[in-house]
Image (cartoon, rainbow, N blue to C red; front, side, top):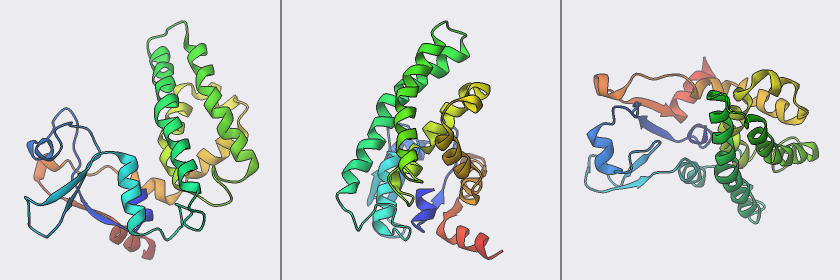
Length: 213
């Protein structure tokens, strides 16, 4: 989403983590995804920079181009608050979410306790969305897209409970994301790179072509 919103085009190599290409491990031995490889010059395989975290990739893309002003460039002090919110969900909430998912999967007796711990963060988000349409204000920001995967996972652990949960603003916010053309576009599955060594052009150019159809 960040790449498309920043109108950045990349060559996408889709993989499964059970079968990691040696080319990937050579540039990023930690073996996690996503990674972004930036070559300084075309066809120079020995001169490159690697970005290994999702948030860092989003920040890189938006610093190249931010037409929707997701970084609130007119309010530079907001970036610190944005990163603080993202860190909260990427660390504390994510830890609680993994415990909640595990408790549901293995029918553990403390499932409700872990869900309630997640709700402490969900409640904070509901309060923010009661104040304005999006997390940071009246327009979308980096935070909305960065925490979306975590909230989507939370909503899928116990679907009946989530549907009846007392978080109407959060549910509206999530539904709007999941029903957006942008979400549909990024969720398309691509051919695995190891099967044919063909790279998929992903990002701005493809997005612009789709918008014209």
